[in-house]
Length: 221
Image 1 (cartoon, rainbow, N blue to C red):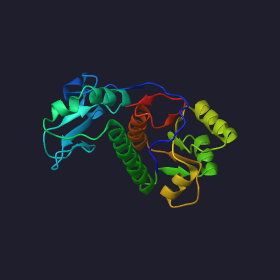
Image 2: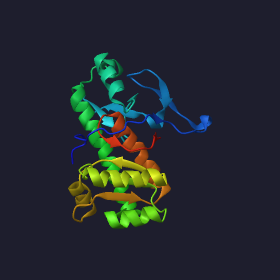
Image 3: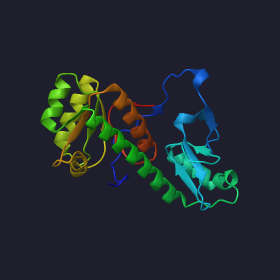
Image 4: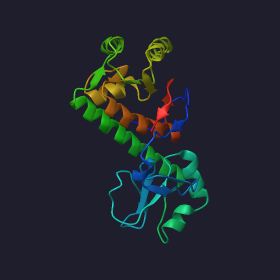
């Protein structure tokens, strides 16, 4: 599955939710140089071979530095050679390679959360089942295939807007179907608040990395 190749539709601003300030651990982004919640940044470490790598799970050994999961911040960090300064003597890949690797890391996380949601019985798939779930108020978040017809896309997004359901446009019908182990699927609905919140964070990151289209609701962290 390609983490790019998505037509941008609406690009709402990402913003952080309210958190207990006493529990926030802050780090400084190498790009924008702003101090932010550690959980909103991506950790980088120098690998055994001296190459700076993305520690997306935040559990690799070594001293880490951080960057916003945002294309502009990453490009700024590379243009100002901040990674070389933070990891003296370490090597870095090119900015385009770095961005592609990070997009793939985020996509892996998206698929992981979707998989856990499916195993927990918190996923509704297929247009008919999804529409019934929407009518009954069960669906909190909806993933729509990017290759839906214009008419179907309009119908589904309008239903989401009327019911206040957050929706995101990503992956193809075949890719969604392959993930579910079924034939092509036009949509996947998430019925659990916790799983929906996890997916929102990752979808927000994909949008900030220039890799997906979002629907008519703000992207929350």
